[in-house]
Image (cartoon, rainbow, N blue to C red):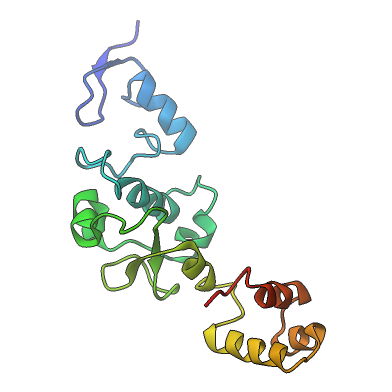
Length: 179
């Protein structure tokens, strides 16, 4: 019979018999998520119930968990989290609670990491406009609206700005890039 040890995860007192020195729960999480804390590898306190905690956890997962869907857009291209924010309590102290329902964590400069100087709370529309893949900015949208008002064909405007006619149509209808 294999020797039984206490799980090596801090705070876990379950017995283990496997070679990884993890209890069954933490071993399964390590296999599934790449980390024995199973998607919560950065938990340092008991702030899980705080309104900002889920956003903090998602930020950490995007930057450090290669098994997450969006890792390639964040950690995979070098986006990191400042050292202080590796503790949820520091992130929450700096950012506070989301100021409105649906607030998202926005990086002002998408080429920089997550830090107090580069992050704000934003709505989904603002965040959509600040993506790396977004070809338009506020100034170009104002030009588009002016051209629409002048009666220029949507396909011609689309060609000029390198976007699809449906994007121009959505701007015209007020579905995107609202004032």
